[in-house]
Length: 268
Image (cartoon, rainbow, N blue to C red; front, side, top):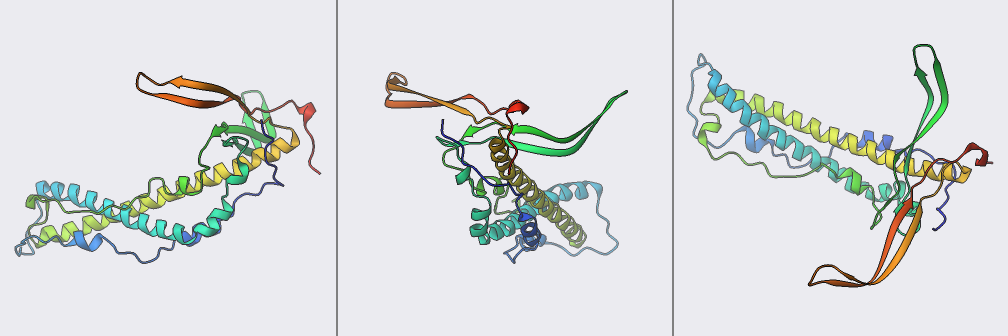
């Protein structure tokens, strides 16, 4: 088992400032205009005409769905463009390569909680710090980058109108309701994309800082390194029509775990 790469005192990522910048989106081609005014032969309707419940329900279902898809796609495109513009800085800030242990093993993700209070009926316990292994060590090949987290759930897709004329507005009253509802769905879609991005960023920061915390605790002797064992096999049968030659199997035989306090070493 290779000795884990060591780090100095771990520091939490500082992408929060970048996250503020990411909330300001560059101009991208929006799909909203294409669905606000569908190219259908509409007829003029007098102002006194009201939208029936049946038509309102039918139009709302389609308009919300189309608007949400367009909003999700547009906001995803904005966020992905901003991520691409900051790729070089993100490659440096969230570099997982130095964290790899031995044969492509990523360290466990450890979380730290401070000043934790546990209340019971007749007792109260106050802990200065609580450490927890949230994710065990695992094999990862190739080594992941921030892209493995930040692009999850963000996607660009072309939104097309339904071919059925009955699903689209047929007069001025329906058109006005359609536009309001499409815009409502569009904002919902944009908010959904932003929520996906925020969740991705939170998971990325948690994984990166949690792995750095592992090395901090490992240097103190507070946590053990995962044990990896390997075995070789000259030939392996993979069915009647396939064999593989020269196989080496790697396994994590003992995961990382917290050690006894008498072996801990304070940092200088």
